[in-house]
Length: 119
Image (cartoon, rainbow, N blue to C red; front, side, top):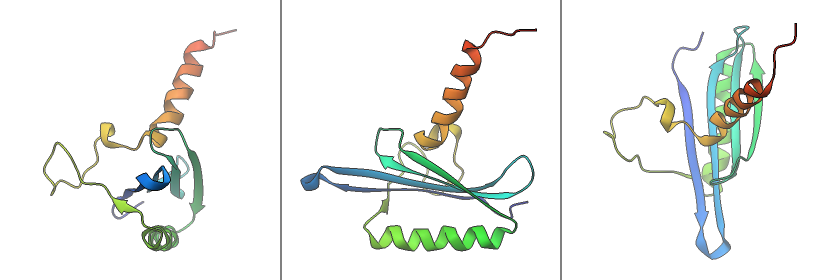
């Protein structure tokens, strides 16, 4: 069980180099109770890539989360300002989730709709 939520969405943009990147991380549990660090990254507006790391203990996942955060900040990634709600609200609603996390579930749903039951 996770003691507190860990979610991060940061961006790096440089118009002179035509660079528009995002990086998202989240610590959660899977169906088996394992602690997972999910990372998603790519060009803003595109699907990007995704990687999931599994851990037995939360502190191991948090350690990797913080190390990756340090690396990304050193490379110029910054959090984007929140729009449309109070800045003190730390909960992420489903519509605020990064697109890369939602894309996999959407594609699975589309695949499931296309399948016909054969018995």
